[in-house]
Length: 316
View 1: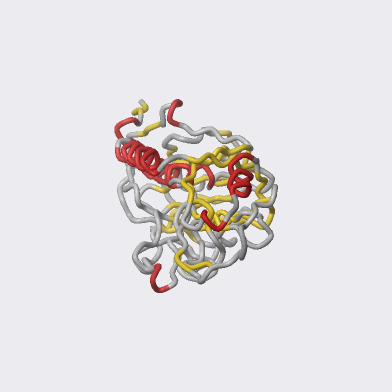
View 2: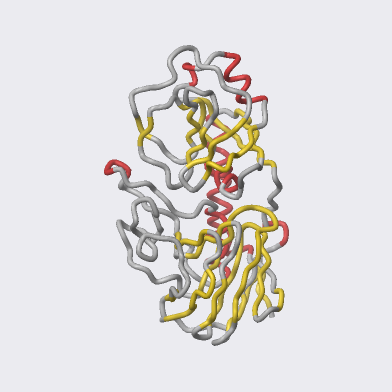
């Protein structure tokens, strides 16, 4: 079912779901939403499955014309959202009529917003996911970002009258500074005590050399004990590498599957959602926690996602 016609593309808009799992051994990244919580929330607000595909909008939003009646929701980073020139709220179900113009402005806070469509976006499944991996040129719409003229299709489901909104206390707020909890390792022993102290006690700025693959950070150099490379081993989102120049790199959702720089730490899963909302010139601080604490935070995060549908408020 044809739902939206793309009039303007925005800065970088792609189709994403929860990711592509099971193919790392073949060199295929996980990809998927940079902010899982916001994607799941967007889907639930239009009665979709949590894992359905949405549009991930980066920094500057696109513009669409509705080709049919449907429902949408927009979550994530705070972005100006208009229907036919009238401002409408994020984090709730919105009824759309054929011919409506849906437009976005610039991101006010955060970096990425998520647009869900009732029924979920219908693009081919590639290796178990609809997520776009632009470097590999597969997934989403022909493996690329949105372009003008693209027609967004959704699965044909009946529109329902029920609408929901997210409780205010569950809507994340994004500032320009991000605190990220980490556990040290697996090559933390390749750094001096001073290097580890430097990493944990100083703010780092996200540079313009940052994207869905990884964030390069600028700040006090992290000191190695000796060599600054290893035999390439596995990489996962959240790993923090430190190359020879001592400037950390945070691995994100489109990361390569192996790397040859030592990893000083790994960011915990719940904080990766918030980090997915960081943009160039924002700052990051790292806080060490124990493995036990990391497991506890992860279980809390999973429980919050699992119970999210029960927290939605039905609108009259």
